[in-house]
Amino acid sequence: MIVVDAHCDSLTRVVNNNKSLIRNSYHWDVSRALRYDGFVQVLAVFQNPDKKRPTFKDAMMYINEAKKIDAQNLTIKLCNKFKDIEDGLKAKKVCCLLSIEGGEALEGKVENLNAFFDAGVRLLTLTWNYANELGDGAQTQQNGGLTPFGVEIVKLMQQKGMIIDISHSDEKTFEDCISICKAPIIASHSNTRAICEHPRNLYDWQIEAIKATGGVVGVNFYTEFINNSEKACVSSLVRHIEHVCEVAGPDTVGIGADFDGMNSLPDPINGVEHLYLVFNELGKLNYTDETIKKIAGENFTRVFREVLQ
Ligand SMILES: [Zn+2]
Image 1 (cartoon, rainbow, N blue to C red):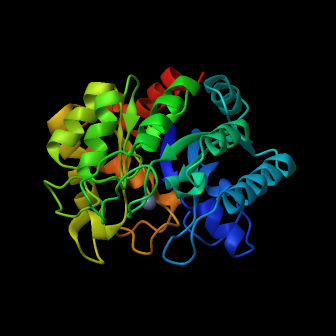
Image 2: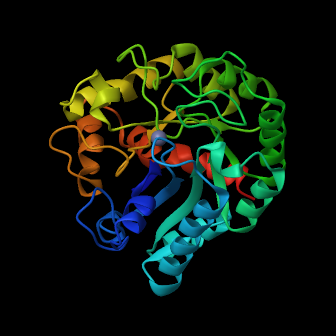
């Protein structure tokens, strides 16, 4: 079974702490991802605006670190096109896609999107929690929606074959983005408001809108987004998967664990080595193997095949 995880902050965490992406004691590393039949990981470049204003230059530094890791290790493959993912999986490598989490890193310049694309970035999370040059974030709502620059970036991303990620966006920004999109849109790491009321989680109408684009919602393993607390179990995480299935069917849900982007995971998950427990839980709930495969990876793979040319 191929596993796709649409979001982790492991790249920035290991670079910031001078650790290895291949083997570490954090939530995610290549050696543990290799335990699965096949693994595709979206590596986010995340710069926390609470610490320092994110910059284009720093984002490029993380991207260059990822390229160094790729050049020095045969077990990982940075992918630009869908064909790269197919080849990497055949060669039993952990396939990685680069993403920028937070449009702040564009610094308001279209040419920076082009530079990110040329450097191999294939996904952009339009906002983090705050408003930026593209639009409003989930925790700073000015009801302005997408700015003209945000509209320009969304359109350009679609022309270039990049995936638009609306996790962290506020509702108006989300709506504006959906109204101009012509390709699948994803929420790489977001849960459901019906199960857990949190500004980072999605309303049912948003889940339906993502489905209408052919997109996917990646469920987030952070306990705060599972049940508003510091403790949760795998079955409470799976309730979010079940809810997306109820609202939009089994083709609209995947995994976006947010490994290394937070500090409390559902019991007894410690990291990527325990991701399979989610699939076991779905099996216990009588989900068919075919459906579990879709949730584990095929749904996101479908989006990658469609968008990444
Ligand atoms: Zn995030």
